[in-house]
Image (cartoon, protein in one colour):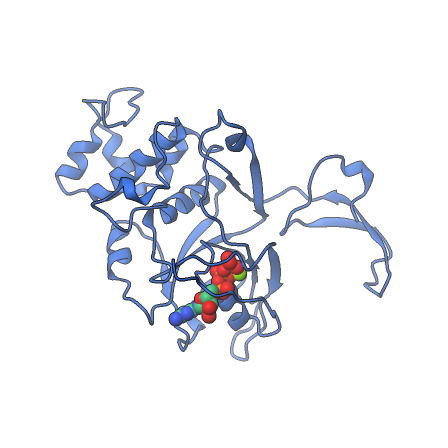
Length: 297
Ligand SMILES: Nc1nc2c(ncn2[C@@H]2O[C@H](COP(=O)(O)OP(=O)(O)OP(=O)(O)O)[C@@H](O)[C@H]2O)c(=O)[nH]1
Ligand SMILES: [Mg+2]
């Protein structure tokens, strides 16, 4: 249990803590958490993007001390949403956590569209099918703490059960409208098992409940751009304090994509995030992007 001296400071999954009391782990043993060790990284999300709303100010810490953010997206059922993946990338870069894209349900649809969208980024990715061997993924997870994030029903817990056979994470069904049912309700960290041919630390994996969106009210406008490394160089010719919005006639990003230096859908995604932070638009509505079925978030 938490010691009173911790005050309002909450303990989250991934925290390293100091304990006093009976740490035997025996039935009925009681120990108190008296100190939270300084966090190496903090992955946050907000309920909303707009810091002027109550929801936007409601910031949650998803996990502490993660080294890697595994963005889990199904290739179908539910369909991939690059807007959501872009948000996760912004959160990862903001938190100083390395991103890894994990595309599940590769037995149902091909990865070309999603992978093509990220072609200009050095974004590592893995494909997962029910029968695929997970050695490449295990190698990427070894020696670090990785947190899985993604919409409900994309297969996070299914993957955790395959990686950690004793995990016994409950797995849900995806309904006809392509949404999972939020089967997992809390985050859980699990130690990955040692494999025969690898020595060293196999790492930790954190399964989290599916999220509907990944709000970014806690990320500053400048930091948003760090989630779009393919656009950063294009801002060199912008006027000072350029807001990079579509109505800024001198913003150099329009020329950057017009000359093929980056994908125009990435600029559109960045600008949707900028607009949603100021409360101008709700980019989570996929119907706002009729030309790009992948773009919703
Ligand atoms: N065809 C196919 N189905 C999969 C795959 N991975 C998971 N599923 C199915 O997708 C459904 C949802 O899987 P879960 O593992 O519960 O999804 P989740 O991401 O943990 O969902 P929440 O806990 O709600 O966030 C289950 O019916 C799985 O059997 C896959 O690679 N291919
Ligand atoms: Mg789950």
